[in-house]
Length: 143
Image 1: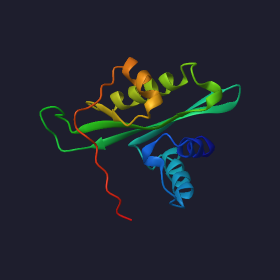
Image 2: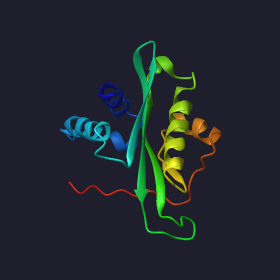
Image 3: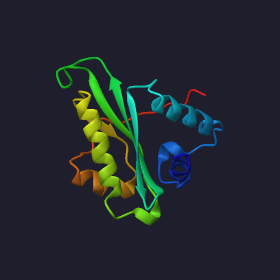
């Protein structure tokens, strides 16, 4: 999974992957270990394998927000880090990973799912019912 994540972050299409911050691989590995060991219950990472080789990954995260009329239980889902190796693109792997993440989030009570997309994946997400939100996501670097 680390190799797939590295490919995602170096492909250059994801705006949030730009930068040169070192140390992320060790933190990512620790996050996966916590998830596998059951320490983290608000996150699930899915792996697609073809002929014994990892070809795709996606992570679902439950985010607890303040309850509001559009989200009465305060639980929102985020899907992050969807990546499919070039050798498996166009075969439905991204769709299957996204749907697995959606099912996991729905089973845990998420009222809505958010994700950021690269331009090349927008059509897939539109086919799955995602719409571009009218609220811009803003970002500020703290370090």
